[in-house]
Length: 374
Ligand code: MRU
Image 1 (tube, rainbow, N blue to C red):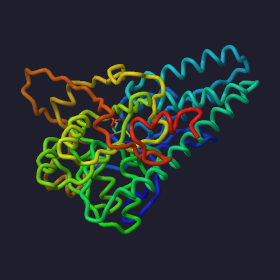
Image 2 (image 1 turned 120 degrees about the horizontal axis):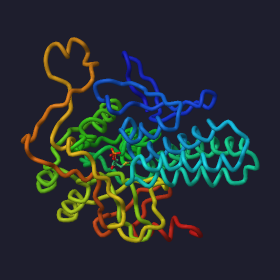
Image 3 (image 1 turned 180 degrees about the vertical axis):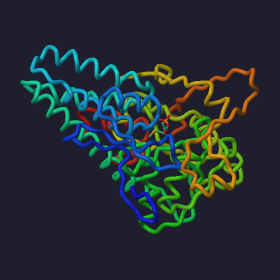
Image 4 (image 1 turned 135 degrees about the vertical axis):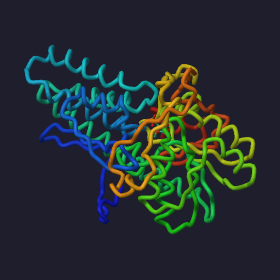
């Protein structure tokens, strides 16, 4: 998507890779919305760290980072021994796989790369196949998001207000986004609509990232506190909810997404408001049978007890606000906190999944998308 920098619009992908230098370039999401900056990695361990410390985040973006990171690690291997190469690949895979647990996209992305490498007869051939598969994953991510936009835009009627949670926008993917794709497509079609972005504490991806993206694209929106959605639903101010997901179980249609999604789905059901989840195919977990078996990331208490931001004063305004965000303590100093990163929304609360091949009911995922589906 395009970002306006010094008055000029420029296209950026959230994740990109330069094969000649084996270099991965990421938009540093820890500095947004105040500073737009890119971070480069030339080593798979740095790429894994960028996933773990949330330089890059969001299911599709960490999927592409893991795919490129695996190719990056494979391509850094210099001997011709296939046995030693196999051990090295395992180490690279494990390092990237252990960065974050909940989103399935990095695991699916790396499985695609590993499978593609199999036919290679030499280390060099396998390295080339790994690179091609990582590029293919990233290109598919963009194509899937574009197709989600076409299907999802059909749901958007003129004058609607749409609620979204967290950031399933282009920053959460290679480009375009999943939950935001229908919004950008509807905007391109000239439909007027309004978006409410849940703030999404504790890391505030809605207030920081989704709102920044929508502002960059000129989509009318407001940020609302996490607890305000029920109030607006009760007063008829929200006509549809669209979120993304980090892992969707093909067997049951349950969806893991940012903490607070389940609560919004319950509220939407109570108020008979359609609740859609937009996903590329890389977000589907074909194996897990029970939502309770999805690994839920437990994050640091600090995220709940503190807040980060830019001081509001004349000096920061004058400097253009390019300094790093500061952390302030919000909570009672002697209290502890719990911080689950994700929750699981059961299928019965989900109206449909906006996928690259159409809008599917939760119980259609396996039959319409699974192996052997026509
Ligand atoms: O912790 P994050 O920011 O990586 O969380 C992921 C998310 O942004 C959301 O859960 C999002 O809705 C799905 S990712 C496409």
